[in-house]
Image (tube, rainbow, N blue to C red; front, side, top):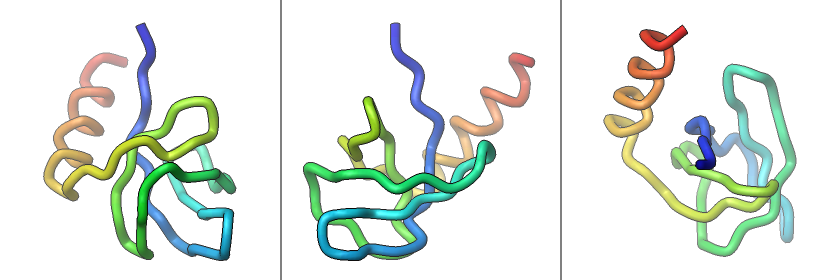
Length: 67
């Protein structure tokens, strides 16, 4: 089973997308169109899905409660 932590897009530059998460910043590739402020899920350093801010918040709350 794979777990992905919601990440927020902070910059889009040609083929790379910069995101932030609780673990810091990353530069990723993407299979979908994204813009600054979008919330995304990733796998193997590739953005695979956009999610809503509400979904990101709900996931983060669940993750915090399982520690």
